[in-house]
Image 1 (tube, rainbow, N blue to C red):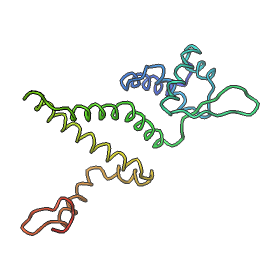
Image 2 (tube, rainbow, N blue to C red; image 1 turned 180 degrees about the vertical axis):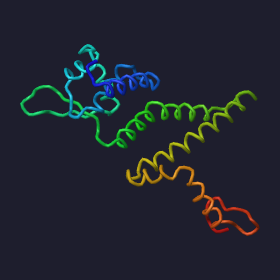
Image 3 (tube, rainbow, N blue to C red; image 1 turned 45 degrees about the horizontal axis):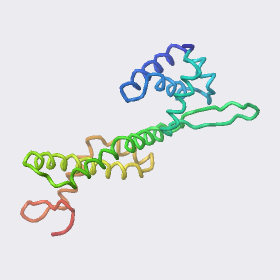
Image 4 (cartoon, helix red, strand yellow; image 1 turned 90 degrees about the horizontal axis):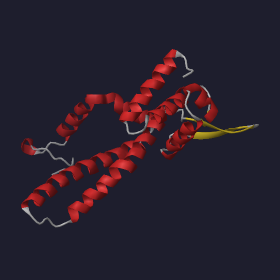
Length: 192
């Protein structure tokens, strides 16, 4: 690797984390190099910085492109392809979450829906289906929340994330505003 020590430490760590996130170490390192690069890099630049084969770089770039995590740029007078990551870290995270949702959550929801459509044939299957329904409802709730959050402007998302556990105070105020006579709460926030 031909990187300054701080950059090398970041790239090595990102490679190790990549293997925990379901991508291989080299793909993680390629992304890290592009993320911290001060300019778009061509495949030869990546080979030089990481000390890996050109074919590994090409395969890694293709994988990152399939995740929509890279941008391609042409440089006048140079026939090579140059790559960079989006500048906006929030755009990167949104893309990553969206791609993981498409690859992992959506297929899981499809299987859960199909299993919930079946007629259980035994007590064991009825119990399993009840548990599957709980999982399906939770994942649907999370994906609905995710869809709402995905629509937020970055500034609003930062505000929401900055609230942290303070959001509970907002919910408590909402509960007090919409309390029904006799101390009961109206969960829909509608008048009873």
